[in-house]
Image 1: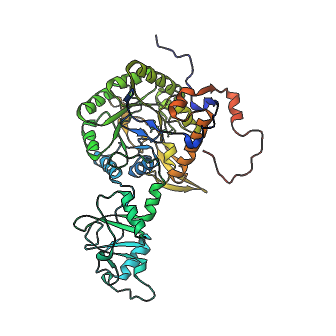
Image 2: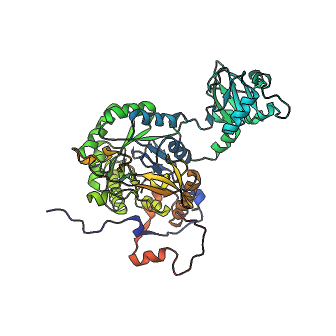
Image 3: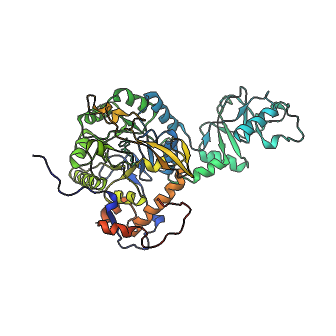
Length: 500
Ligand code: IMP
């Protein structure tokens, strides 16, 4: 006879947190959202932690290299989507790893034989006000000079004047040598009152530029997630089919953490994938998705460094309708977190869990953490930002961004859903949609994390692990859900602003 679970499975919206005593020391400024990303033994530090407990979903419409840089800069991690050719995915990983915060490849380059008119044309085209003059006009050619608006006067100078006659020549420039740190570069910028500092190698070839304004921006990202070489930390999605080809390329490109991306991870395919990766590479690997203790323990025993939880709760997901598998996200997280804690008590090894999908309101994140998740993975949330890879469109008076599921016809990521045979090719498990455009990632994340920290103070917790221990969580009745929003008042027009 089948096993019946008599308790209904529940979603985040069915729960609330009951405040604990807030001490005077418990202020948002004192809250840390640092959290482990991969497993570690009691008394040791995890090899990777997140400064903000957010991961962006392994999806074409969410996680490319641009999102990877933006999210690592904000303290979280992106998992670059795997539903693309191996070389393209590895290229995206490489771009994130090579992105040196503050050091940029020069994008406006000319030769000494070009003219003032060429400077003016380039300026009109890309709006830049600094031009590197290299021997061949390429970004890494031999640096011969620099042109800024201080070097010419449009009202007086003939536009056919060659650049060599008015550029600031290399001999008069202050430059940094390749390999200097950002703070050393900033000292030069500061000491010599520069707006831009060219970085050159030993052959005088231009490497990168450091702009004064970028250094300031860099200082505005106190949570940025860097590896030992000061490159951004980045993850990548893999599948349990082509891993023997994909994993070597991703590791070679510098991926820090891999994750097997599947709608149902409780499978022998995943065990074999983890075993292969562990036997051949020194790279971290997460697995999933599961929704119960059996699935969690299976993947942990196979060697997973973290486990992803959630089936069917994603905003674009129709798995539950199509196949009838899944579990309310809150119930899944609660059960897996219990299994994780039990496993820790038994073995002394802590395996982080990630609540994946179904975050609709910011407070859902706090609930997921309180219920035991170490971090959350989100698709819809990140798809709304400037940094997501999709088009921004105007529909009526509103801006939207495109957002499609990995199981939709558009993504054609059938490997994520493949259960063997031909079944994975026959029906969709996701939809193609729009989400409201929400602006830049950092601005939105600042708001979201402010809410989380504030709620953690209400719950008397300065860290996520304190929250997991201290939280008092109550179920809400269907009737009391109504009083949770504004009710029994007539709302004034708020110009379409909507709280997330
Ligand atoms: P969201 O944060 O609610 O948008 O959920 C994102 C999560 O949905 C992803 O991290 C995946 O686990 C899952 N997902 C992505 N694409 C699909 C799909 O096409 N069908 C079902 N689930 C999907």
